[in-house]
Length: 200
Ligand code: HEM
Ligand code: HEM
Image (cartoon, rainbow, N blue to C red; front, side, top):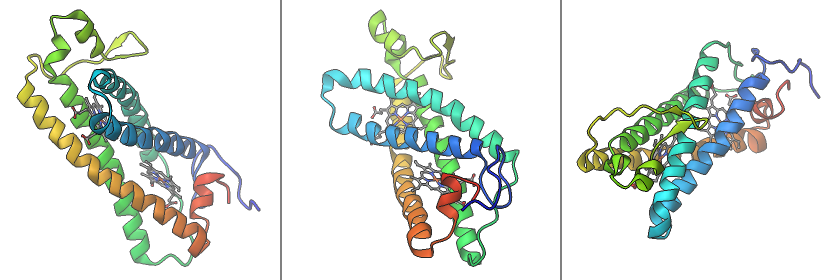
């Protein structure tokens, strides 16, 4: 039963609908980027890799905007208190894990962008290959590149960071989901419900 109003902005009791929408939309995109990203680099056939890398990069540059929006919105809000009965260490661990999730996501977007920006094939003499790497928001706003002269060594450097950081993100996402389920099924508190339907 709801005992507080379901609002657009978050309250001290529950998350607002904007935060909840941003959370679940980002969760779907991130789980998609992580699984598809792993698949395309490990299992995809050689011929389709280039297309998949370019599609991954395009989705990710939209995701970067969503992430920026989410962070700005989050900074503008007051956030719910932990439910009564939450130990201080749990609150501390939750804050640290959430901060780490935001930082890892920013690092993934940054290293992915730097990798794309330094790709020599971005300026390939073959227009079909180069066009594949031309990233545009809404089809016409060109994503600016950081590296004027792309080089393979630099791409390799950012690629290694992108992959390395993705492992920490994968682990933390699993821990995060486990924590949410633990709250719901074992502690039986409002933590999952207030991120779900809100207004609990
Ligand atoms: C923001 C969230 C992002 C997530 C969660 C993500 C996730 C991943 C993952 C899991 C991989 C596979 C790593 C491996 O095991 O080798 C990958 C590879 C890749 N990502 Fe991302 N990525 C993100 C952003 C970006 C961005 C912004 C770009 C480019 C603009 C990008 C371009 C690429 C490319 C080109 C590869 C293939 C790397 C290779 O050659 O091995 N990613 N990404
Ligand atoms: C890739 C997937 C996900 C990411 C990156 C993510 C990220 C986050 C972040 C950063 C927060 C903190 C909100 C804030 O304080 O600003 C949060 C909260 C939350 N997430 Fe996720 N999330 C993901 C998936 C999930 C899933 C699948 C579940 C449920 C099974 C879930 C359940 C929750 C809950 C219940 C909260 C609220 C915690 C509280 O009230 O203190 N998340 N998530």
